[in-house]
Image 1: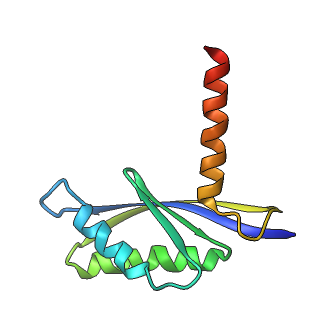
Image 2: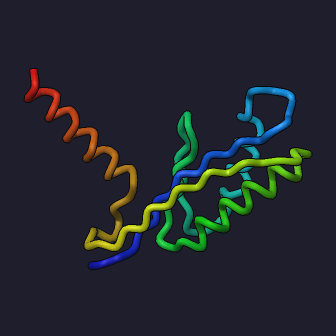
Length: 115
């Protein structure tokens, strides 16, 4: 079965907040997208991975995050959004977490061979 899977990485930078920490703003942004149907996310230290079968859900999530941060009183918000669209044959339930696990297993295997 062929399907389209969209992976995106979004990084949010509130500018002019008077603090170097952006965790409060990011948490509020993520909270705002929790109820968007057909969007999955994984937070990591340098950004958030978004996953969906619909690129419009990725755009909707990015817009929602930006609006929430602006509504918290931040006048300037920088968003970096990288999108990877994959159309390939895959099992219907394969997700990013399965790909990451597979990649880590390959990496571990390759390191073992080098030793």
